[in-house]
Image: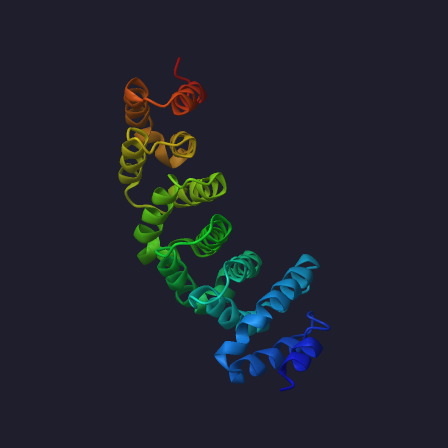
Length: 254
């Protein structure tokens, strides 16, 4: 009955460990169907305190992660609240050190990967991809078991109809390519196959070109350029063809 008032009191000063500790204890005893109404207040509180560099991260994780995950996982939650939940996780993860986030890494990335199998509006999908990108940036090789699934998700969403989703997927591809994958040639082949298909997009080409410019892909650069040239010869999309041509110029190919 008094839960909303207590939440309001705890969030009056989000720089205090005691406030977040109290909030975490309250969240644990709340009925699950009450959690969605605290998604927006928690997101606002985290953004405000983290912007000042004053968020007690450990306590904030305990209080916030269950609420945001509930917002993402429950099918009846409105799309805008799902997006806000994902953005809240991204905000929180972005200020965490790996050691702080490690106890939560599997708890967070598992649901993010799972819900990407569902249908979502573009804003929600983009926000979820953003959370996935951020946790991979933070935890890197600690998340090795999840990298193949993440790669499939990012490559698939390079063909999404919405530009915001494709750009987020490209960001994820580049995070994976920057030292997280054992077999970078497999990613190159996937991207080339996509570029040669009817689903080719500018973002797929841009991702491939950016990867070939990375130091850890030096040994694959020549073969990658060869595959890109071949894709250019068979490409039927004028916009994608122009993007390939520009990409080859970036790579020093005349």
